[in-house]
Image (cartoon, rainbow, N blue to C red):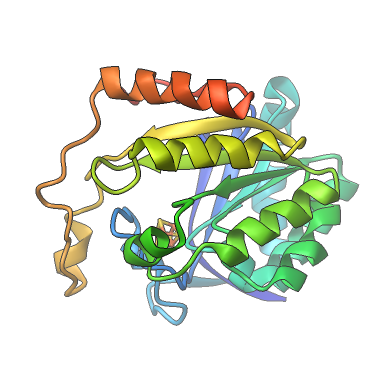
Length: 250
Ligand code: SF4
């Protein structure tokens, strides 16, 4: 089976527990205003590389000693990896047979049956919530949030571990009501084991004009450390889950 791969990172510590090999899949249907990888959007980009699933498995297996020493494994990211769910499934199934921890970093704005098909082969979902408000979600990403919230319920029902990721963008996602409704939502999901609050940054903004795209957040500042810590505390109170601001991000 062939998958369209954007790139591979063989030593990540930011995409799940331990040291991880991250396979970035090509293609995404969302258009998040803060996206730092717009070069992953085009499903047919000629810059992506076709890989056989067996080839990807060989790359992953090379790091087995690191996985064993650190509690790490493989993470499929993107783009949106679930747009190539059959390829991802083929690799993850083999990884699980070899005892490798498996994770998918996903927006969950994808067909629900594709999510449920992957659940048995996935130890951990790193699931984005972009916005709890449906209209604001449309403005921020180009799509409403119903499908992704529904898919989160499905994963939770199947008792599979979830880490939520939420990007704090001043003026777009940091409203107190947004944070409160995020907290109330995750409080109902027993299998959400942690929440990562990620401060907005503009590191990938230089890619937008190179692709002929307008970067609309030119004047949007990063949230301050004080604001991040305040939101972290509010979210922990309403959500009842541990909330992290991943290392050195503020
Ligand atoms: S889901 Fe991820 S890859 Fe897709 S547009 Fe949003 S930030 Fe970019």
